[in-house]
Length: 85
Image 1: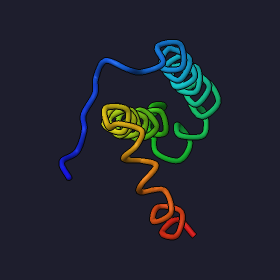
Image 2: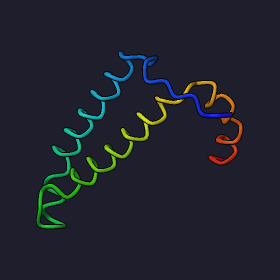
Image 3: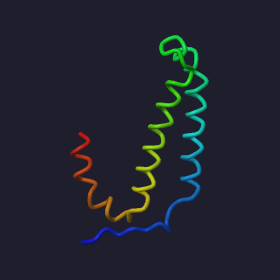
């Protein structure tokens, strides 16, 4: 059975909220970890750079998962739950 890809049907408001939360989290990481990363690594951007890199990886995976039809995820759900445990 071929994978069904759909880039037209997604919840736009949920996507915007997720992006806003990532932006807010990045700002919080930067504001709270600047002094600590300055003391430990000599640069104030060590932790924010790592956070942004991981956030971009997460957003890429999210967009890829968003493109798959939900029935694919429904079929894979038992296997994914077993793997996660």
